[in-house]
Length: 368
Image (cartoon, rainbow, N blue to C red):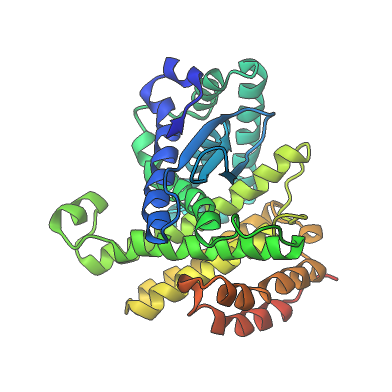
């Protein structure tokens, strides 16, 4: 079942697309994975929540019907803002010459952030809590329309998959139906949901890459290996876009202050994306033999993007400290026990790598 905000049916197709694709990705992941675990897969996707201007997505368990069911709920502003992020920031990530130009521009990324924030404030102020009008105003302000939506629809598809797969993973691993947990356990479950979702994401977007002439024509590649490389780059860039999403989501809650610091319920956003990057890169490089020149590109994506964020003040020193790192390691160290207890097959091979990852994290040169 899908619950759409009624306002969107007055919109053009390009403005409805973010809602439709979000729901499609949630249901595709939900039905397949929940059914595989003999869990209720009569999933509801609720896109109608409107309790203030924020980016919020969560999954809930509903006992009002027999058997119980799951519902993925998101704020009405999340789909249009997420597609806006993909449009404004995604088109600068690839090919590499575009990103290099942004990295070498001292104020380039900051200007993108400033202009996007201005567009958001304008759309929010003038829409008067009408999410349909908000979408129209935002898309007009950032120059997104039917003529260029195809340029970034792939990145939006990837990012909305990452978000919806994550929420489905919370239900799939048994967290929601196993009672209450401590705040530390809940933050560890967030990392587990990230990594489980990333495993599905890898299978869908990398392993599932078609080896056909038609697909290569679509992706602008000449060989199957080249298609795999391009898809890997896009998926890693999608993780980078999610880091931007997390920072902006926190800014909405903290009156404009961009922060990646976690809280009572969620781990630190930078470290979350860092672990996802490691997990996806390890899966790819363990199963595919990319040429050295392609590996260099893949390996540099995360470091180059975070360098850009530091350079433009998106990540501040206050938001990246040894104390925050130690807290994340405490959350990470709970994962082996939870993977064993909940029999999460997708992460059995990840557990042995945790000690090495924690060593890397704890040896980072960070302010106290």
